[in-house]
Image (cartoon, rainbow, N blue to C red):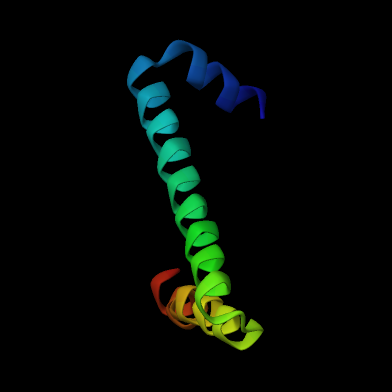
Length: 69
């Protein structure tokens, strides 16, 4: 872990890349939360929210075994 912290402190380009990734991931999660809130407000259905999460995460679980190698 210390190696990564040293890399963040010493390498400006890596630090920019790391912060860019943090901001991007936060944006992805806020989009998911906003979508779930909107679906809840429009449909008031737990099934609709489960379809949202299924559509969001099922491709990830299906494709990762082939993309990991």
